[in-house]
Image (cartoon, rainbow, N blue to C red; front, side, top):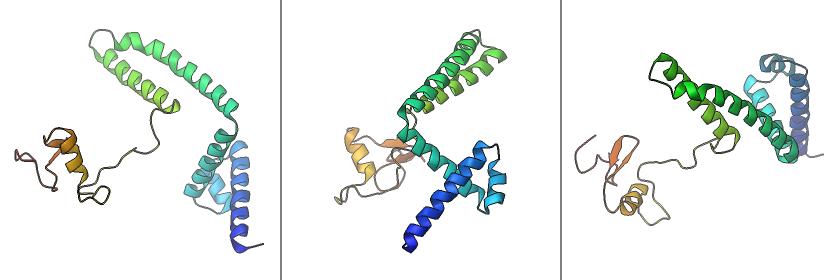
Length: 165
């Protein structure tokens, strides 16, 4: 067996052991100590194995989603009227709770990606044309200066034409 295949098999064996220990009630810290790997490695192994399970068992995922969704909706029905009530401390707390529930519903429904869909960098050339992302935004916005995360950009990485920083 090649060295590469040996590493792959060892990693698969470790992932299986991690899952067995996790299912039997061990914490990630305990698993880390038992197997002699970092806690980060244990977390990655659990996450990888769970994503494999989700890909392979769509029915189980759909059933779990349905249960979670129903739970969140029950909580939402409980907190919504309080959040919509007169402006007081209870309404403010309920509003925060409602927004958290809605974010969680979006997360389990796949509306929130696990990482940003785009990442903006200053003066990144697009398609080798020499145009920057800021240039494309300005063109799409009819030549107006575009504000990106609080900084006005005029395409050359400097503050916008109006002098605001």
